[in-house]
Image (cartoon, rainbow, N blue to C red; front, side, top):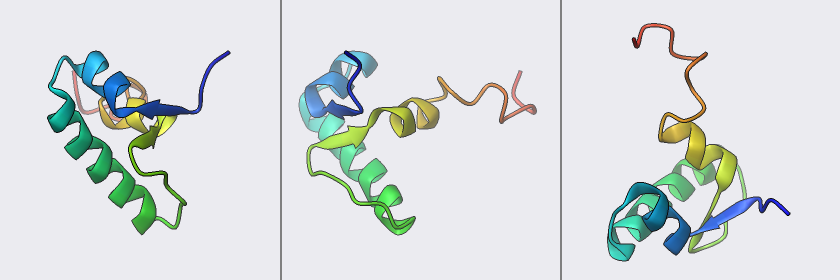
Length: 66
């Protein structure tokens, strides 16, 4: 079953960074989501939003990047 949220450890593993740095990334992404009016969960980030922000899901959105 695919989960909707990624935990800090999942973010750290995906990006190959420390857990403390991953927590900063999760906080930043959650702050962005809060500013857009979404409800967030501390220590977790929406998986789809994470993937879009780290360029896994934006190939068709950013045509200027080769």
